[in-house]
Length: 270
Ligand code: ATP
Image (cartoon, rainbow, N blue to C red; front, side, top):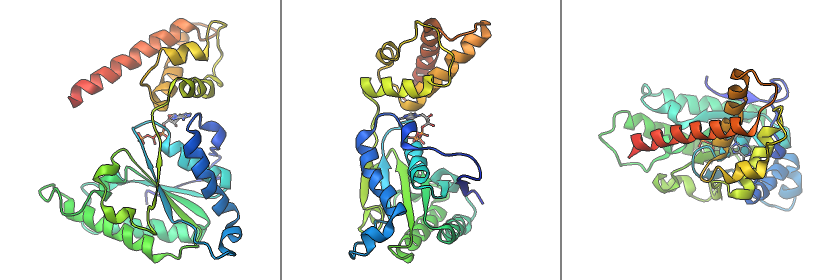
């Protein structure tokens, strides 16, 4: 099975501190952390804990990171799968994987189930009928809807899903009792880029001329993933030059390189 679990055993623990910026998204997700930590607080009053939330935003903006942070903050297991794993799959396999994933999740509740690229399975049904594998995709989507409806509201399984195409999703996914909350995860502004740089500069040995504010100004339009990339690339560039610290010029080289890569990607798309 593709379901992966991150918890204390595997030593992977992400918290909200690892997520820079995204204040509103974090505030909304805090509530889910509270549900996972103290479900009684809500259910005793007769409240129904939401089953899921949809994280919507461009690639590399921290959706996966946020989902892991929710699990980390609540100290619960994290199961994940990607919608793209289900493309071109043999008949019945997608649906049975979904069934397995939820079976495991229910056993380990409270926990988080994260579905990345949900649009790959969650596109509106009845479209793209010529697309090969469409039937299996629909089976997978139907199984997912069945699972979401099947477990009790207060079972302790919370499903977070991510997409950059909320517009193509099947409306059935957004119905009450399913992904009835949408959380927007946007590209970082200047201050957020500065904060993201600060997170990813932390592990690096830096020269005195490296300033997060300056780096943030050099990187408009960059996602958090691009910034993480810049930081790592700059360390590799400095190492290649045999340096003892990473300097501003290494960052500028790394930014150029990433910008070059992004331009190439855009050319292929357009
Ligand atoms: P995709 O849509 O491509 O799956 P995503 O939105 O799920 O992307 P992540 O996988 O969470 O993006 O981000 C990739 C990496 O980029 C993270 O592991 C982290 O290193 C870095 N990153 C992204 N956003 C942030 C952020 N807000 N703060 C700190 N690091 C970030």
